[in-house]
Figure (cartoon, rainbow, N blue to C red):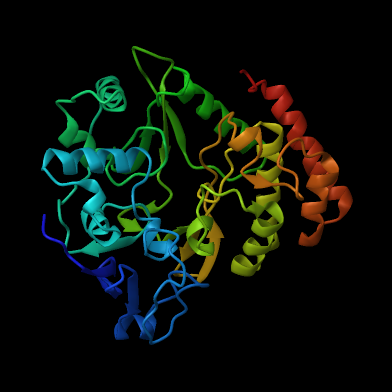
Length: 371
């Protein structure tokens, strides 16, 4: 594999700009003249729409800005990419972030595409999820898989720890997950029930489905919200926006509320974030790190909006604490802590308290806390 060193970043058929590796290994970026005329800032805090060369001030994401790091596969996707590189006698540690973006090419999450594409991963239609789950298990156990190429094509651009595939089903783009080494067998059913419960709590969720299986109660699937028919939608995680690693628990929900206000100026979006915080606390979803919150850019309305909720399960983070603190508390926050985070959004304490108690009761009635 030849080193690229420079990539053209595109949004559909429009050139956003150029990403190039500097002599000290940092990813410099510059918007194209055309994008400066009619485009938008792809990362408002780090990459304002200006005619200059941007270079990361700190090396958080292998030398590239967070918005580009969001395109890099991690967890399962990175494991697949590394296995594929090794199969081609390429040492993964010698492949730069820019070259890895070239591997992602046009198949990454969100709307950004990178050219030239190195491996040409393409989306496929697959229906035998039991077979794919078995092959994923082999990869996790460091065994050889006869379907490494297929798994790479289906999931090599994905993030997150759990094995997953990105597939087209009946003309729609779906993400389907399989259990990881550390998951219980029926994690798919659990996530499906969590999503149903979150929707009852007034939280925006994607279209979800429990795909049938002969080996478990089903595989969790969600319709991709970064795809609208044939159009890709620009998406950035909180991690990418704030240039902070999701592996470091350094945020509070106060930060997320403030960020939501700055980006959206929409009180309904802030209430949505409040509901998600309450849900995560009462449902014991403590893996609420900065990559599990994202924003979509609506180019027609020229505004940012929260994505539908995702990655909701019974989970723990480092030390059993929330990855994102609640009013300074990582463990066992109470209702007063939740209210303290919510008060700045402008809703009355009475309404905030009613929302909080309602979500708590819905979760208790749903009986989803089985561990």
